[in-house]
Amino acid sequence: MKSELKVADVILKKDKKILNRAEKVVDKYQKKDYVKYNEYLYLYDKLKNLMEQIYFISKISDTYQTKLIKAREELEEKIAENSKVEQQLNEKIKELKNISTRDQLTGLYNRREFEKVIKDEWRYAIRESEPISLIMIDIDNFKAFNDNYGHLAGDNCLQKISKTMENALKRPRDFLARFGGEEFVVILPETDEAGAKHMAERIRKKVFASKIPHKYSNVEDYLTISLGVAHTDDAELFLFEELLDEADKALYKAKENGRNKYCFNKLTF
Image (cartoon, rainbow, N blue to C red; front, side, top):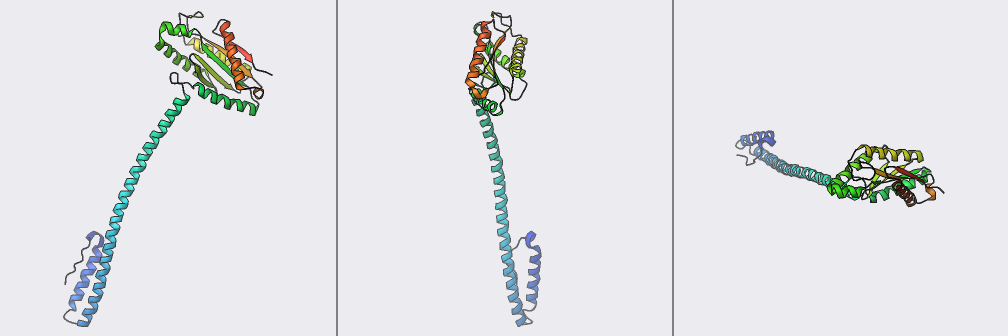
């Protein structure tokens, strides 16, 4: 009698040997003892059925394990793919945020971001009873610079001056933005009158020291800036627009008084 059970030697090699020994035992009693033969045959059939079930289960297990491995690999690929997409999305969000808050030519914050930050700093100054200062900045004779050197040179000039002024700021919360055209604005939180004047003069000197030629200027042979400084110790009594207006008036005064200097206004009750 030969078994028709086909099993994978790697998986059920030991069980296959047991089945072969059982076959020999059954064959041994086939002609000698009919009663024992039938008993052994019955047990053999049960063993065979059991092994067939084990084989079937092992094959199912192998199938599901293969599917599980494949599913896991696909999942890992999806996770990696999603991670890449998420990274690209975050980069796009960051890029869009920069576009919405930064001036594209100079890389400084734009006017819209300035209005957001000044509101936050104004509320802080009121809440903490801290002073706050603003500096309005204008490039002297910039139209003459553009008209004679060209707009490309004008753009390069704006970029260079922006970097110079940005490097002049010392504290993390000091905020510089392009206000429009050749105008810029600086927010100086927790800065008193003396500190605001010192920063204005520091910025003015840094720009002049950059030695950007401007032979069409009626001030100097190099490019210069005028600054209007405004300060208040009483933010709770005013609107930030009033401080901005005082800075603008001080800037106008600096231009009227010969440019390449700062003038100061204090907003007080």
